[in-house]
Length: 124
Image (cartoon, rainbow, N blue to C red; front, side, top):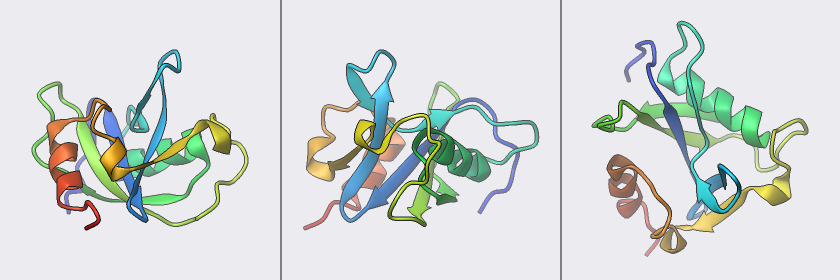
């Protein structure tokens, strides 16, 4: 596990019970992974955990960054869900986030490293 300071955008990949956590994208017409930029001296793992909590209220741990990094300099981090219910205070209310079944994420724009990870974790 790398504990280097994060740079660029960090995307959180939260998979639970065969579903992927997605948040509204931009103007709300689409869905995307929770993402944000690191604070000074923050690791990618810590950034992922923070942004998921800030956006959704769910507690997660940033387990491992996926390799390779995106060509745009983005890092995707696999996160483990630590709370089944979100706490109050997330930017999005629980009904505004989506737990998408893996098979329904085909139309969602995701980095290739995330697609590769999800292919290996699709329920049979």
